[in-house]
Length: 128
Ligand SMILES: [Mg+2]
Image (cartoon, rainbow, N blue to C red; front, side, top):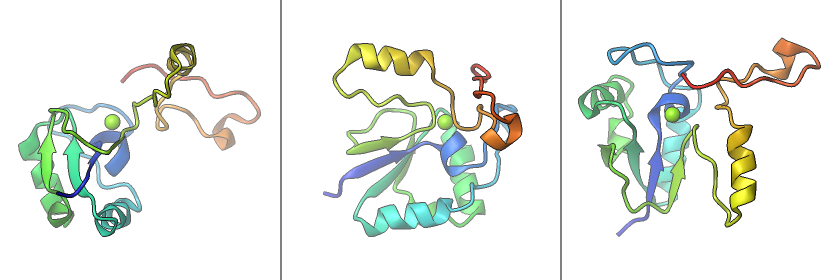
């Protein structure tokens, strides 16, 4: 049995910049196909782990030719080897460190790049 890697859709596989409704799907992020192909080449079963409705996700995968790379789409946590998610904080056994990470957390797409804000530290924009 192959190890499972769970990959999020919004903010990981797609070019998500915020919630725009249940019918809206952004196109794949540049490099998403190569990323999934590399995971498959490493022997992983790829599961898209997302809160999005699975029918819409399967249609999105089909539309962009990614469906053959994906074993399942689910919103239930599978027994995965690793999770790839834009909203995750990795727990490394230290609750205090984890709380600090949560206090300063922002998804990559919520933080303006250094080029956009000059020398100012980026400010999290909050939850979308
Ligand atoms: Mg996400």
